[in-house]
Length: 229
Length: 407
Ligand SMILES: Nc1ncnc2c1ncn2[C@@H]1O[C@H](COP(=O)(O)OP(=O)(O)OP(=O)(O)O)[C@@H](O)[C@H]1O
Ligand SMILES: [Mg+2]
Image (cartoon, rainbow over all chains, first blue to last red; front, side, top):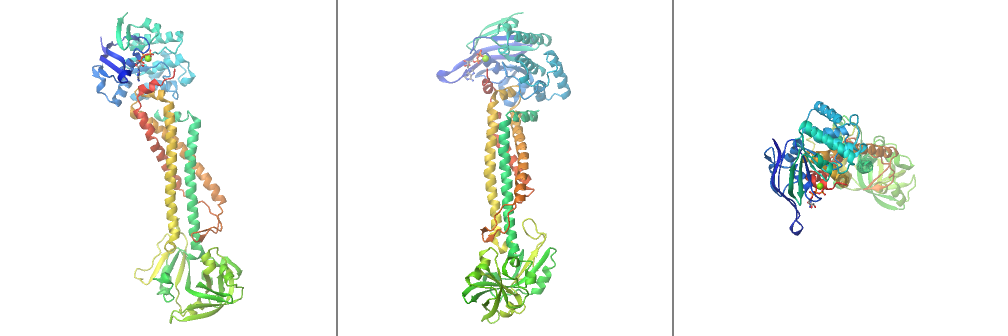
C-alpha cells in the first residue's frame, strides 16, 4: 500500500483567549492510494478545516502534513500553489467554476497552469467530457448548466490534471439526491478504474454508504475510523 | 488564458467598466484639449506679437534697447543686412529709426515713441498698414506725413491733415530738434502701448531731423519656415567678431511672452498630474470593487494552484485591458473635441493679455505627439493604480476568500 498523505498530531486553533476554538485536536491521519474516504461529523466539528489544511490552503497551528514524505510546512506560498496544482484536485460545495470561462476552458485551466501542451489538453478534455456525459456542452458557460452538471465539470477539472488526491467538501450538499447519487457513482467509478484517491467531508448518507473508509470527527478529534469493503 | 480571463472579467460588469473607461477617456481628452488650447493660445499670442510689429528677430546696436539712445545706430549696417540675407528662410526685413520725443498739437503735447520706417518695406513686416482707421498709410520714406495711434489722436484732438510738431534730440550735437509733420492717418492696433504712444514717420525725414545720416536703430526680420515654437529652423546669427551689434529673437525681445509659453507648460503638467491622480483613484476603485465582488471566485482560482504571482498578473491584465479600452476611447474623444473646436475656433478677440491682444479666434492646436504622450501616461497611471488591488490579490488567503461563499 502506498501512502498518499499523512498527518501527525495536527492542531488548529482559531481566535485567542476565551474565544479560542480548537477546530482540530491531535489529528493523526494516513490516507492510502485508492481510498474513498468520507469524513463525517456534526456541523462545526472541523471537517472543512481539516480538508483546507490537507491541501495547504490553511496552515495548522501545530503538527505536520507529509505528502510522499515531503512536509508541507517547508513550502512557501508559491510552492504550496504548485503543490495544489500538481497533487490535489479540489471540489467545493458550489460555485466551483470560473464563471467567465467555458466548460472547456474551466477543465483546461489547471492543465494550462501545469504547462501541458495544447494537443494533450484537448485530448484529455475530450476524454473527460465523454466520461462525465457532457459532450457537446464544452462551449457553454457555467451559468448555462444545471448544478449537477456544474459539479461534474468541477470533478472533471479536479481529475483531469491527474492529481494524487481529490478533496471534496460536501460536493453533493447543493444537489438533489438523484443528481447527487449519479455524481457519486461517477466518482466511485473513477476511484475504482483509476485508483484515484478521494476524501469527502459530508453529512450525506449516500456518501457514507459508498465510502470505503469512514472517519468521524467530533470537536476536532477523530473519534472513529472505520474501514469497510 | 489570463488575458482571456481578464478581458472577460472586465466585461462582466459592463456598466461599471464603461463608466470608468468613460471617466478615463474624458479625463484624457480634456487633457489633450486643454493642452491644445494652451498651445493654440500661445501660438496665437506669439504670432500676434511677431506679426504686429516685432518681427521674428531684430538687430540693434549693443545697449540701444536699454535707453533708446539716439546715437547708438547699428554698426556696419549694410554688411550685416547682406550677411543676414544669406539665411535660407529670411523673408523680408525693414530698417527703423526709433526715438523718444514729444508730439505737440494745438491741444497739448504728449511723449511718444516715434518710429521712422520705409513704408514699402514696413508694410509686410508690421500691421500698421492694416490698422489704419482714418486716412492713409505712409506713401514714401520721405515727406512729412505722420501716423498716430487712435488714443493719442484723441488726446491731442487731432484731425486728418492737422499740423503736428515733433521734438527730439539729435544724434550729433544732442541738441533739441523740431520738425513739422502733417497727420496722414490714424491707426488702431488694439494694444494700448501702440495706440497711445507710438507714431510712425517716414524714415529719411527722421534720419535728417535727428542727424543720423544713413544710420538706423533697428532692423526687424521676418522668416518663413518657422518651427512649431515659432523660431527659424536655421539659427540666425551675427558674425562672431561683431561685438558692436546685437541680434535677438522674439523670445528675448519679449521675455514675458516666452515666460507665458513656459508657464503654460508648467500649468499643464500640474493639471495633468491632478487629472492622472483622479483617473488613478477611479481605476483603483473599479478594480477593488471587482476584486471584492469576486472574492469567492478568486479564492477558487487561487486554490486551484494559481500562484500568487499569476493571480497578480491576472489583476494587471485586467487593468491593462481597462486602460487600453479607455485610452483608445480617449484618443477618439480627444480628436473629436479638438477637431470641433479647431474648426469652429474660440472667440477671444479683443481681449488683452500681458500686453498682447488677441486679434483672431483661437484654434486649439493638436500636437500629434500629445496623442501618444498623454495616452501613454494615462495607461501608465492605470497600471500604477492597479498595484494596490494586485497586491491585495497577491496577499489574499484563499481560505478567507472561500469562507465568503454564498449558500
Ligand atoms: N477562519 C475561522 N475563524 C474562526 N473560526 C473558524 C474559522 N474557520 C472555522 N472556524 C471554526 O472552527 C470550527 C470548525 O469549523 P469547520 O468549518 O471546519 O466545521 P465543519 O465540520 O466543516 O462544519 P460544517 O459541517 O458546518 O461545514 C467551527 O467551530 C468554526 O466556527
Ligand atoms: Mg464545512
